[in-house]
Length: 220
Image (cartoon, rainbow, N blue to C red; front, side, top):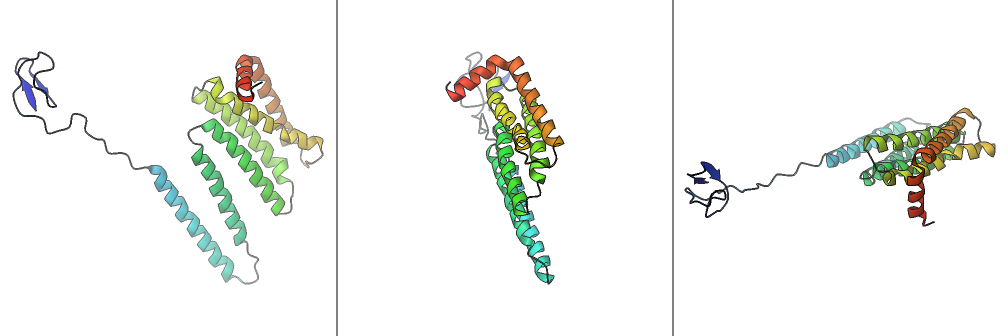
């Protein structure tokens, strides 16, 4: 490393003169890089992905062994496979949309809605999906969007459109109630109330931003 006798400083890099006083330098050129390469961190997501794959393989293998070894049982392994497929579908959407959390919440809400409806229909449609899961899911989606917007200090244009869509989904239980699809009304009533209150607050406090965002998105 070079050294400036006048400034009493060491100079890294290949300089002919001191960058401070333009005086002569003594010593040899530094063999160390001025900006050394920083080794990239090992992606932890890849390790998590591998662990989940291993756990899925173990679960399928164990369930297959148990199901096949006990005579007279139906192949409940099919439900395990369907559950794992549902998990990987939801996990894949969450991983793909991780750069935009509020958008990920919307996509997860949509996909989870479809999955629970399919599960309920495949098991005889006992109304647990529309009576309980969908109302709770939509309330959680609205709350998650608001919390993320506050926690991440998002601008209105970054979350309002997705919040409006979640509110619209929150009105689905009310529509199901009007068409006499529900057996249990209370969760859907709470979900509809939360949706109406959230939309009212959005119009009152963020009305201009809401109008601008809808104009931009829908080209009204």
